[in-house]
Image (tube, rainbow, N blue to C red; front, side, top):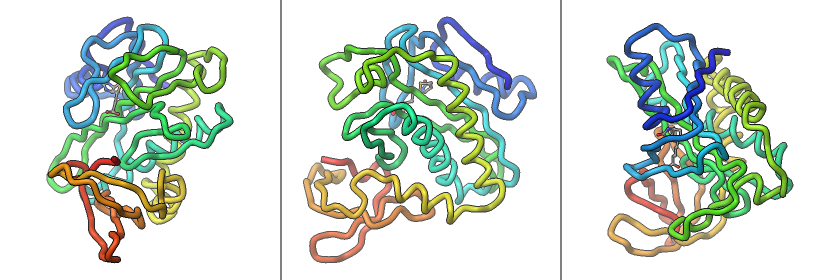
Length: 243
Ligand code: BTN
């Protein structure tokens, strides 16, 4: 496995994106940093992580003839790859919170940021960034509902070993896409989804709180909710949050 280790960088996603545009990198090349000065999260947020304590890394993934309309399957594969490793490390229940946060009970332990390089109707290359809280025990008060493997288990983890386990697990789930087992992948994703089929409170883009139940995720990755009046509505990431 081609693993590039950096002591400090702005963002492993940015670094890997640049490297991939300048040279021909092996599939599943990994860039891992002990510290990021500008870690990026979903929807323009920041990703902060204590130096040396956690995993912040990016993986380059090339899937042949990967259609744009199937891009959410990569998100499913990544979440499942992460989830399966974490299930083996902690005793509490772990879930995927749509679209691709990983929760332990109800607290976030990992986040994923996927950036795709698109050519025509295909995804030529994906940069998959993962931030996993491993050995950090204290988090800023601004961050709510956050946890780490150390908080959950009481012990310190070896970051290199954990990284290998995660990349290998992700490879396994990416093979579902390569061999066109998309429905199987989706079934596994849905089975691990936080609040699946449970009435829950959500906030829409106008800040209105409402009750709904997740009944599915469609092939474009939209969250499918059944509302109180039994109507079905679909939401994309910008349109909805958990309350
Ligand atoms: C999120 O939950 O908002 C996604 C967080 C993704 C963070 C990781 S850390 C490694 C990679 N480099 C970045 O700048 N971001 C991702």
